[in-house]
Image 1 (cartoon, rainbow, N blue to C red):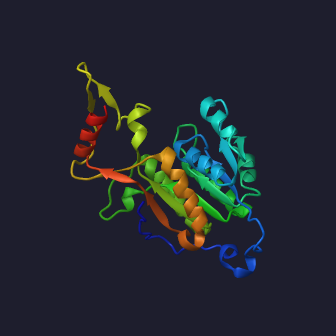
Image 2 (cartoon, rainbow, N blue to C red):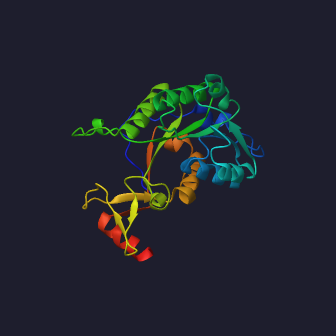
Image 3 (cartoon, rainbow, N blue to C red):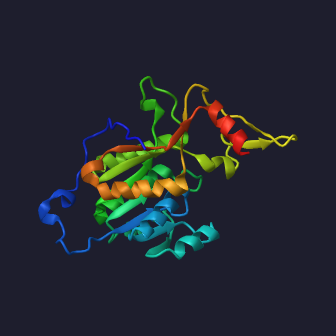
Length: 264
């Protein structure tokens, strides 16, 4: 894992996490209830699994229990996990989602049925009103803010817009930037990662990546959850307002091609 520099506003530190007068008694059991949004996504489901394993009480939101029956069934039987079905477009549902919890992991989606910016802002404001102590938002960069500016990627810039709003709210937050999912090659037919079979048993991979720049990869299902829980453990005193870039190995496209040939 590597820690990205944070050029943004000052760190946001929740006094309840740093004031000695607010610390629990030595024998007290601290409250650890975590809300996870879009729980059947790759990032969020990883967080749910690890949080359950280490003793968090998890409130796992998903839009529909029927969308991914197998994964929903897996999450449902995990210790201390409650699945909460509801639309993030329903303001009344969102307003109640974080009440009583202390932590939140949020990864919004850019799909056609929702406005990601509006959803992200609504969730952040609801978390602030509910008194969330540490809010981790899965963000991405807006290339138009780089030097020199570049064209923004539509599915990335929306997350950056939400990140800036969260900062304006001064919500105690950390922003994780997740690298490429290595299992994109073996799952859905994403254009950038599609392996097209050939008649001779091989495959063709076509993607517009520079050959001289390494691609950062992460095993989302197995590694992200543990890293996110570690950020919660460290707390906003260490990670408030910070960006944290997640990738566990990086390969040049040519090296990745050779690996795929060997493992195929």
